[in-house]
Image 1 (cartoon, rainbow, N blue to C red):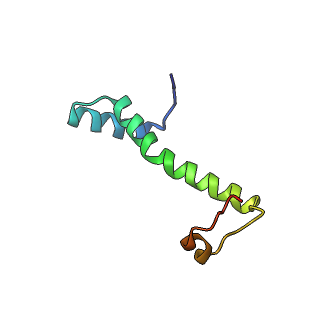
Image 2 (spheres, helix red, strand yellow):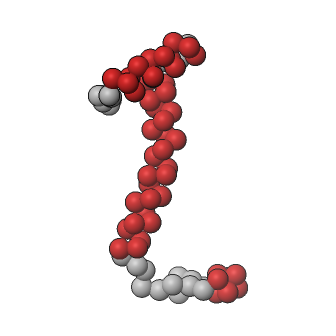
Length: 71
C-alpha cells in the first residue's frame, strides 16, 4: 500500500483524466510509476557503474567472438 500527496494541480489533472476515461486515479498513478520505474532503475544502475567501474572491460571484438568472458 502506498499513499502519496500530490500538488493540487496534479491531483486535479489526475481527477479530470479519471473522470473522462472512467478509470480510477489509482490506475493512472500505478501506470505512471510502472512506466517511469524502469527508466529510474536504468539511470541509477548507470550512475552506480560510473562510480564503481568493473575491473575488466571487454572490447566489441571480444564480445562478438564469443570469448569466455567469465573465465
